[in-house]
Length: 258
Image (cartoon, one colour):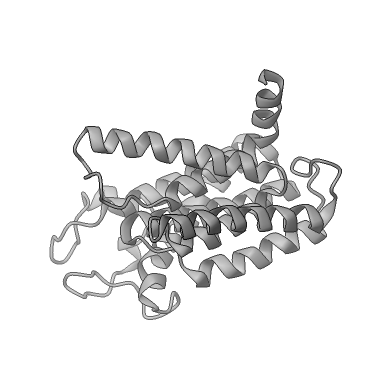
């Protein structure tokens, strides 16, 4: 029975991943995510149901459009696969619980932000602002003892986290004079609202470390120039998701080490 439910969540994740691909393609272009139906971006042929089966269609068509043989972006396959795996693992970890619902929401949110910022260097207000509202609703209506720390309860904890996240990256954006985008600043506020205080520090410091290491490697491997911009959003959302999963353990380890 348990294996069946895990499989159901994996399939659900594949379907949601397919929808996330639609959001990733259309939201930055200010297009509707409902209509028109999906089409090949090269030949504009409307895709049939058999062209849209998550994972299977990509594999069956060998990564090419059925009609014009243009390559299908590998991102389509990777997003569907990642979402399916995440949904299965999250159910396996948390079962049918409020925390599962929260983590499923954040996994979808962060996958969309990660890919759009990586591909286009954009963090969309139309995604971040509603996500902040949802995070506050979580704080008000769903007890989250795995996140709340420092004897600050409920929404106050997350409001403080949001203020710290926004304030820290706002100052960095001012000092850097364009070295950090304002989308990252708004995303940092969302990070604070989702993790709360003091875990917002864990997420931001981890993102800075990850971003620094990857940036140095890209420069050393000559994949990026010293003055080329590297999107910071993917590091922010990856660090935040890790913090939501294991933030208390990471903070406890650090305090014990110190």
